[in-house]
Image 1 (cartoon, rainbow, N blue to C red):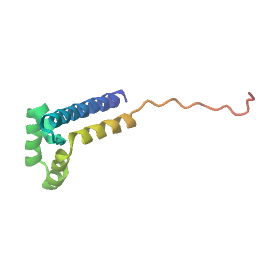
Image 2: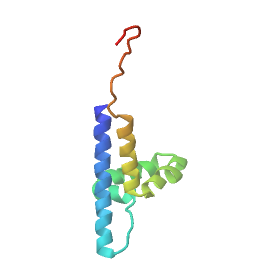
Image 3: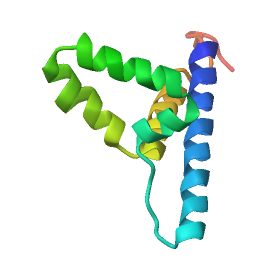
Length: 107
């Protein structure tokens, strides 16, 4: 559960990094636009992005690649990374232990 929360916070941090880059681009150009997940990944770590594209084109069935993963890579990085991070934080949140109720005891 700790690993899920750490990964969730890491994804939130990456989403904020992408949002900061989008904000800087907006200040430079005056046009607001969000960077796609694939473009963000290519800037962050080009070798793994190339590996993903190679695996996607060569080994995945066309149905999984073109309407599936390729579409997700075109979505805004802020939305994808932030959404996954929040989902992981909700799924792996700390829960309080359940309290047992004592029946028959008077207060």
